[in-house]
Length: 269
Ligand code: 2AM
Ligand code: CA
Image (cartoon, rainbow, N blue to C red; front, top):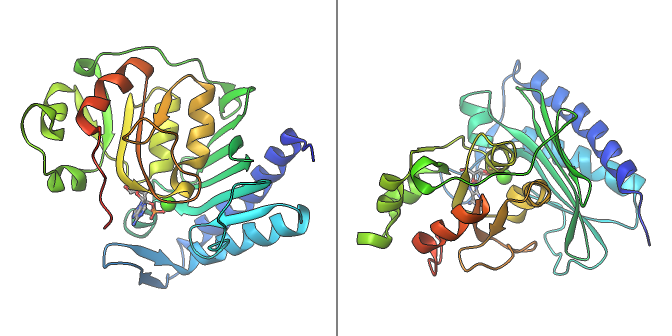
């Protein structure tokens, strides 16, 4: 079935706008917070509420589409056949709880495994990153230019300090060496925001040793449109169904950085 991706994008943005209002409102109220796999893995009642809000709207409007979300939706999905929505109700939940800032709603629509629409809404900055396959990527309605090249010595890399602390390699191929050779590193605590920042030139690369499809699916659509390269650490397309490692960067920098992460399995916990 052929889809009207323009309409899908506009409809999704409308729901995300509503969801953003719900999230901003919730910051004035007391939040119920739980932990998931470990004490650092936070989830709030708002993660569930927003995911249910989006899922119900998608199922009502597009009954022939599938939905996979971070909290509940589509946990049994094993194939990317057909149209699949991949949603993260709050990317950067730790920021949502601790900073009340730097969190995003991330929505990707994928057809037969190919990203068609990607939306990342940075709620508190009110920044909308949107892209459609083959139609370019936009920040608040302005088209983003193709990425240019930078050398590692001039590059600012999005990297969580946790990965550095856990690095087992040493010497010339280690992350420590990579960081020393770079201009600087930053960590914003939301993969979706960091991928969006790479798309608009605020970062030159983003690296993560453990992410899930809902963290990066929308970012992948954006980054493809601006000519950035996104693979896992073994130079393959990141998985749309299970956790994966992520190396995203301007094209030549991507090749340079592969040296430091190639064959690294990432971290399960
Ligand atoms: P979250 O806020 O939706 O949990 C933090 O650097 C980034 O990694 C965030 O995008 C965060 O998403 C994601 N993240 C945190 N814990 C994770 C886990 N156990 N598996 C996959 N991604 C995770
Ligand atoms: Ca997430």
